[in-house]
Amino acid sequence: MDDKIINVENISKIFNPFPLRKKERGPGLWVANLVRLRRIKENEIVALQEVNLFVNRGEIFAIIGPNGAGKTTLIKILSGLLYPTKGNGTVSGLDIIKDHEKLKSIVSFVSASFWMGLEWQFTAYENILQYAIMLGVPQDTAKKRIKEYGEFFHIDYFDKKVPALSAGMRQIISVIRGLVVDRPILYLDEPFVSLDPEKRMALSEVVKTLANKGKTILISSHEFTDLDVFHPRSVMLYKGKTIGYGFAEELLPEKGIIPYSLRLSEFLPDLESALFESGIIACKVPKELIVLDRVFNVRLLVRSERVNDLINEILKRKIKILDIKKESISLKDAYLYRVNNEVLN
Image 1 (cartoon, rainbow, N blue to C red):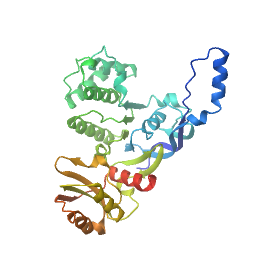
Image 2 (cartoon, one colour):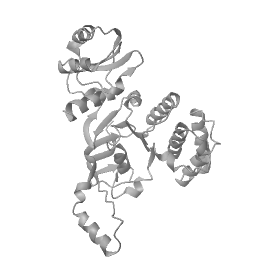
Image 3 (spheres, rainbow, N blue to C red):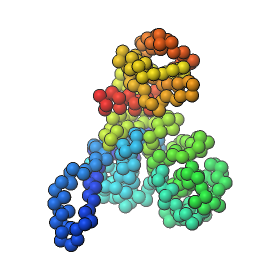
Image 4 (cartoon, rainbow, N blue to C red):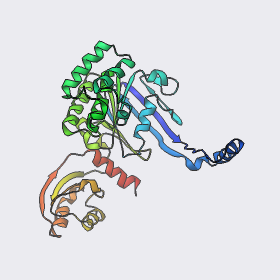
């Protein structure tokens, strides 16, 4: 593919929070706050810093990073909801600044926080239908799409009002609202939040089907494993900065690093330190990759020529290796490597 539908060049976004002082009144208030304006840079929050990317038409593209990395800010800029502080970009030929109002009409934006915008006195069905009609979808078309997605996701609570829905139910209703609008570009901001495994799988299938039909889809997430099924190109953000860009296997600059999943009887900090300091593993193990239930499930980025050293280092501590399995490089592997070796060092 070489048909770029989204192109971003050196996008930065800086927020200047400026809490007003409430004690003063009249001229005193203005004088006090004008003085504080001189120190505004002290309060600056850099949400994005010189981000570059392009997305091809019909591509599933990922924006990944932890909470606070700048993912939602970037999507809002690409939706015409925020102006960048500097930089430029286009979406389907529309300038993200000059044409921001037109831009809103060609994208559908679904956010994990959008359930808060649901009308709580309406049923789930009424929320989806009214939203679609407000955004220009003919009523008959909207009803047909709601029926199709309801059947696909096995929704049996369309007649319930929002307060009666669980967090996962509200999330999938928000997702269906965005899907029913059916615009050529779809932004999914943390779409898998609160969804059970069945709904996650169903949403993944929908995303792949829509991309195969030519829809361009951007997905942001801090739960990287949900995205590996798409094998997407991605931009990796950390505190607003780009720390990686491309496919997962392209983002490990070192050759010969192989992920291994191990089930161990024990995994202590001294073992982790020994493996890292001796160069057997390429980065330290984040705590979320260790699950304790009498067995430690650990995923390690191992240098291929040091696999035997890995095994020896474990066994000499009288730790049992219950299972060891070679894996493919994931987005999470690439991200953790980048954070540990390029940001934290």
